[in-house]
Image 1 (cartoon, rainbow, N blue to C red):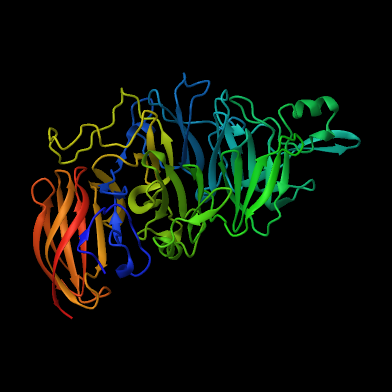
Image 2: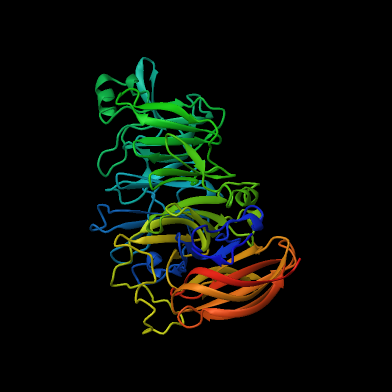
Length: 579
């Protein structure tokens, strides 16, 4: 039974599971682009195209669509500037681009071993591609192709140093062979690179899959890739063996699992490796020959896909396919149970690679579970992300935010001040004292979160009072800028179970100067159709409104505009009208 006075509207967040009549009074059954910070409801910011990130040295914007994006601090050619790298399609080839954060210079980088720009990755490998870094060196790879990386002093991308090397004894003499190796993903841990779920060429030339294998390199030196991947280097001459293992021994281990390795995420000094159904830990042993101690930690906690696990705020978060789990080395618990767990399980019931990605937004203290939209051709493999379920790991609340049709995200430095961000063309009076100038972006001195749009370009993901959405119009999809839509909705309010009630008055508590559209709904019962009536209120001038909404169940909806309206509570005056 709902109490007529509901305070701390931001304390429970979005709850999509269960009977709405049994939810806490502060919970909401629908919302979009709002944050629940434990007390108030606050709007998210929108998103905005940032042309600088794909502008070349002639000041021409290139609307290049990128699969993956990532940044490195600098390299030997960047004059100390941070660099943004991207993997994407150019014609019939998959190529790699680079942008400087000192001055616009967006360009393709060569694959130096082939003296061309084509990586050799196939066009259908978007959702099996991965990125990784070690010691300021970046790499991109896919499930069916060996990774390509750029070391600090390389002018382009190339095969990783010593990749695929195995030493055999032939006619009594050591012979170093370069074999075909691919993997599901490469991760960096303990200053080594680790391959997960490998496929390796045998001595006879056959490609053998090892779905539970973790293969590691030697240590990496500063600004360089590891120089040793050869676990058979002991077959070399003593001098060559000593040179190969000078930075540590390479090796591998097959996990004692019946499920393939999916992904891994480090937490402190422990690497958590996730199979489809289990969690293993690898911790440094201090033994050169056997550098890791591996243990089965959880036999009932697995990961759905690459990019579905991360570390945030001292814990690892994992999307299992039917749940979102928070864990450390001691225990794990669901953070979606009772809120969005059932909804998520239904949404990704028939899963394909790439449907879900998980990312951390530390400036908001949130993780975002990014999903494809129901208006996309997801049956045809279009899994670019247009919506995110967001979880505030400080307040423990879920919400939902729109995304500009993105493939990947990363944290990136802001463009140089000589190339300022275009101000959002929102219909806000510039000298309105309720609006703080230049407050329209959640950014820090280090940068902000950006996303690579599948339709081209790179976007700020939490900026301004407008958003760009991919909409279907005139028999085609286009990226359309529009005012940011922010609302919360609650249905299934029953003030006196078994009785009909009439809402005669509402009163909003909160702060802010912008308008709030309040809509009140009535229905004969919680599961029947609702009839809605709306009014425009203002927390600075008009908080009280009168109604004649009579029924066995009620609902309400708050639509927020701008950044100045922060509702904290709502009071209902109700009158009983009978059974």
